[in-house]
Length: 59
Image (cartoon, rainbow, N blue to C red):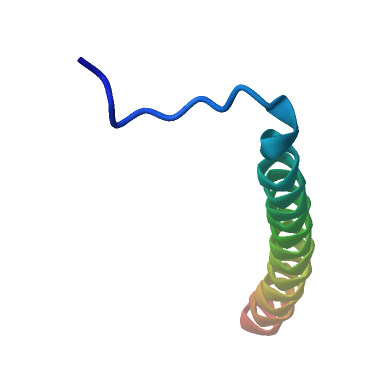
């Protein structure tokens, strides 16, 4: 019925897949970390520019 599914008897065949999964998961976490870090920097810079403009408008 489900001949297209392949589950190996020798479970060591899963090792390369698990290693690849771990590598990509670490890469995804690092990419997310750098995106968040960069986003916080940009938000801080934008807030500073907004404050400067607001101070100029009040003068």
